[in-house]
Length: 206
Image (cartoon, rainbow, N blue to C red):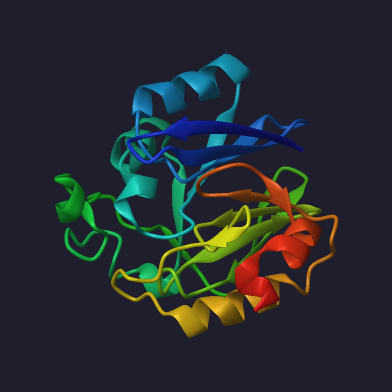
């Protein structure tokens, strides 16, 4: 497995490329902005995009979705609970940023515990609502791509549509069932581990 990260857009959103090194197939996770840079990264590495996975349907994670989906033909994967948010200018916060919502619909709607394969990799989806109704994390072996659910010593905000503080705390508690060694790659900011967050994240400690 290979994981590559780009920091894109006004909010420095982390866009990840999760690649199977044997088949050179990849999932693009959260095409936040700058479609040419995303597409150039695919070309430079010789990767074929099989999926575009959206951890949650907020515009700072999906602003380049239309262009990347059109250029690659990759299937768009979204949690079922965000199906009515993805293409809604207001609910995906596109109006807030002065941008249009994506026009591309989700091809694959997943629920908690569903899996997809990329080459020899198995991706397991963990529903972690609280920041958004359809917020989800992606677990691959000892790697967790956490979207805006869990940050380094922090947590995603809950004051937008569908956010709820008690709900995100329950989602964090669920992530704490994972092993301490699991590496966490959030939607914004630096990587961390479950063990570090268990000891130092004030939202979990409370």
